[in-house]
Image (cartoon, rainbow, N blue to C red):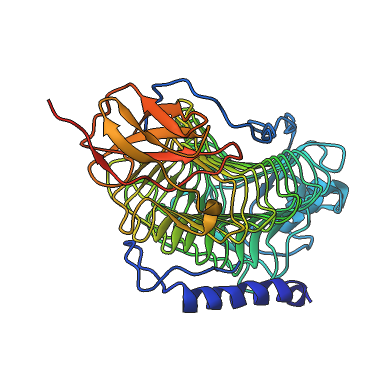
Length: 530
């Protein structure tokens, strides 16, 4: 029955994956393409003050949950069994039942009761830990589950594997291993594998913590038959985990679908963080690294993660697509402008970021390294850097504020691809875009095919563009835009002048109209020397 519960989603996604494999050309992780991209199914410095484009405000995302109370009750697991029997040891299943009140401490045998300190149950915040003599940190012991564990339904409970070595194994039996449907719980320091989905945060789950910034708080969530972590709830935090890799963060152990799926209705969740240890490694997954999809998937923040690279941030460990915003996801932020908030979204097989769907709007992709390593200098590539299609509108890539520009480089296909006449109103400003195999910004009728500026002179930079449009000026060694130089505004006749001398050797420009629609790059103009 549990398998049937998920049959339609699995079949739909696998059908989409087959379609992707047939049509997307199965691009290699080095960014080389074998066919034209098709629809998958499932930094510059600001030097000028310019008019801004108004966008829908993004919801504030909590930094981390605050509902995890001080825990006076402790339950120690000292058995690898998956039973609920009165014997001389406490299993993980029994420990969760004690925490939720499904099992009374008074019913335990005396040897079991020795593992319980305090009065567990629905009225207390309980911490479940593990006996390192049974679960050695250097030789993790496996708990082979026979069914999904009891749901964390009361709130305020924690399953903590610090200072021990625990593998929770679903044995490919088709169930979710952990389910949370309440507030203020935590799951830390476990290896979770061979489940249908490793951890599910249900619709009522809020302010829960999965992982944490300390090394002992890291979960390794890999080799699951569908998704690593599925989020249906809101205001949860996922930090410091390895999702789709081994415990070293250097080898792929793919989840069969998404690493992390933020599902319809899930809002204001935080994946990663800007402080040391808070970012996740979300790499090696068979489908998407992070997917935010569906109506109501809104106001989520993904920052400071390695997506498609290993734990060093310097070696590709590909997902098929790094980040996907789909089917009505709105007002989400990927990255950030503050140091530490950049995601490294590189090395992914078919693309770095995919944004698609007519109601997928007002998302912001800012301050990321897309196609480079964590230093921003070494080539890792992806299929396409960013791909917008199927009517995606009003999304923002980059920005002219400090730290908002993305590095989008070394793509095997395009830096940014805008596809379809209904894909419009997307703003692309202030990024460093260079060394992409088929060019920087490509429009296949996307963004209304807005004409790029024409540069007619370089001392000062001048030319023509759409009337009253913002004109962004770049320098590049070719025909892209590696260095953002600043901006100016065209007059009512479309004439513009930019007084700063660009570094060159070539000058390029884009235009952005009042609706936030950005053009492709202009033809390069050779900057004067001397």
